[in-house]
Image (cartoon, rainbow over all chains, first blue to last red):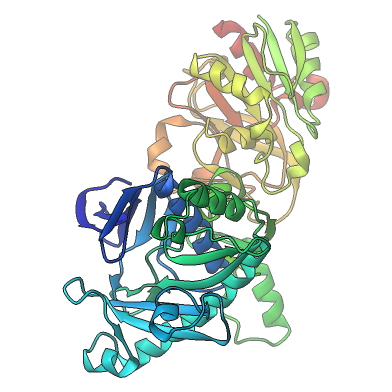
Length: 317
Length: 216
């Protein structure tokens, strides 16, 4: 898969078209900006770290049944994603008070919240991404009521999954920013990235920030933060089960299926007009990056003989 | 000429092959354990029949990853003669050294009996001692001998043996044995090593081996 045309360049990422119009490539850059572009820097290793962290987390979310744009990681900086049209809305989910919320409401950073809070910002460079509410979103027709409700549900569900996963990395998920997109059929996917650039992550024991705040607030160890989160995320097992169904290609006579069908018919189940038999494999998997691509390789290299067989697979846990 | 017979865990026709090559056609032959990585100067490699790796997953699917298969592949690429019998044929298709695949017999039963075969080509190192169009009799013994390929016209010049009269397993175009495009890798479902002496009821299989000897 090759990059064909640069479609968009943002602060931390570039988006390219590919030979397949359904798919884009996102390239993660080392550049960072903060305070609406006033502060700029290059953080060595950030692009690779964010690409790895995001890939891993999107795979986790796929396992958890949260639709997202991730297809696979192509190399250290590039990720293949679905072509989705991004809603011009940033969704912020907060589990503790921090950043702009602390400043705006005069609350102390780290104040716990009984219930997660959702905020929305309108993605607009001229307007400097102003905070808006749900009525604004509907008035500006940024999303329909139904889409907004899906976006909110997915945000809260994703928050829950990520809180639990980061906790096993010894990190507390303080808040995060999500973006969503929809494909040409109107299906909504979590998009963008999930990384220390878009999440506040505090060490459970030391309460130290392991995120972009190290850069925003000049806390030092900026490069280390990205590396540290990457190491913790990649070394934390995502256990999952995959079910692989292998069947003979439809044009091949499935003698076993025919015999089963005849047996059913002889028992009086004459409504049965077709039976296809197949093989079912259940794989229990442990920590790996690029798991989706690897499962496809397992099928291709060993589990399925493409001359005779078709296969499909799904996460079951 | 030197024959090498690859032995996989679950192979069970290697001794019959060994006997025919050593005692019937009187050529030097040795076993090569599948864990070896080197063929050590052989002129023809035989992948014998059996149930390598218990036929788990698919017949031949796991044997193709045995360490020796890398050497077999290199040997084949350099033009060395490779003969795959029954499970050996299945391994060669799984390894991509021969096109197509072998699926379950249409009748869902293991078939062990003599069949009639027509020799379609005799301009190969494996069949030169036959007459073109000759009908021969050899035993088959398999559960997965149903040859399949999406477009059989792509291998029409590679069909060496066809079932004659009756198709025992549903094989497409009655295919019982095929050769690769280069003409040095041959796979067949029947067992020529089981019919190389008169006392066994047929010696039609013997000429596979004598053809190979005469080719080198």
